[in-house]
Length: 485
Ligand code: ADP
Ligand code: GLC
Image (cartoon, rainbow, N blue to C red; front, side, top):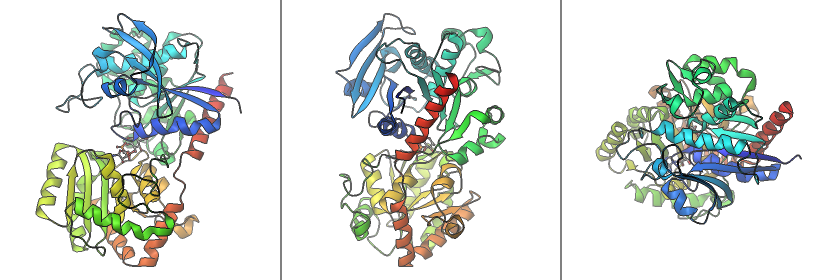
């Protein structure tokens, strides 16, 4: 195996900073790649949490003026992850969420903040750190989208570049005037074959246009984003670049998500003692103020509350949940309107609908361990991770038939034809009616104990780890290097 060095560029990395699945992927993939001969280091911004956790990191370079203020590049490690940290206080030393102010508004200088990250990624690509000269620079999402662009416009020998799309809905769109401020050549960069996007610029588009390879996080999503609707403005570009586009499914960290050792759940269990789930269910019901009943199927949700996740459809399905004698425990945060509507639903249905607004890792584990079924009614879902955790915890996924949900769950009705064992329920089209239909089907299956047990056991037997998926990334890097040699 030829050793490969890869610089990953990501704006969030679990367990240091996380707002969603991108962090989980950026945190788990480097560890899984080691077994495939890939040495990955990850570049991330020096947000306050990063600086706190990497207090002992070594300074590699220092600049008096990096995009308008002093800056440093640090190298260090945390929890087995090798990291480069771009410490530029005037850009990253801000409280709260990496992308938005306390009022939920994008930081006005996000363009400069993430251009700075990509600029340093390109410089490391050119050999800024002699101890780590990467063969490949791997950019995640729009925040890293300019890394392939800087490498391209620098016009020097460069490493190969990979752009991974975790979510087409976030495109990093800014006014064209930014081009000068971030040191890209106006003439060539403000072009339909560069950053130009409907008169402005887009960092994601830049990456998709200029990276050597494009990946996304499931084969079905790789297909969906080549349509006008799924591509959200970039479908045409992706159709043109289809020959370098592929979908590689996400895994989850099966150590972090392990019901046999999980410190966050009330009772640990494995495939042999699934009956212990009942004890977790009882604790979950207590925490969500739900009636204590083992007979009522408990539906769990762990999600950002956004249009993508289809949770307005779940609100419409509440009458079905009540009529079927089911319960709901929802943990999520996001859109104010959805938060308010869920709080109202919980007030109107005490004992039946439980809602926690917020972000809570520990509760997320308990929901996986204690709910009977886990719901993911997304309108689109590049991969989705909560349904993978559910498989590992014996919660039966009920999901929309889109993106990575289509690829990772085997519907009870398609098991015979696919040759794979059923692991859950899929519904389509993504409407409240179809969703309600699948909830009714799941309820019937829940009350047929052998059927339900079979679903749980095939879920538990499904490989949701990174092992093979990391191998696909390793093969992609090697293939890219060979094609550029
Ligand atoms: P996305 O990245 O689109 O939000 P994913 O399913 O890929 O969706 O990843 C979401 C990740 O964030 C999962 O690890 C999930 O457990 C976690 N998560 C989402 N919302 C919450 C929450 N409110 N509290 C705790 N964890 C959450
Ligand atoms: C995005 C997607 C989600 C995916 C995650 C990690 O946030 O919405 O489907 O699992 O990235 O790739």
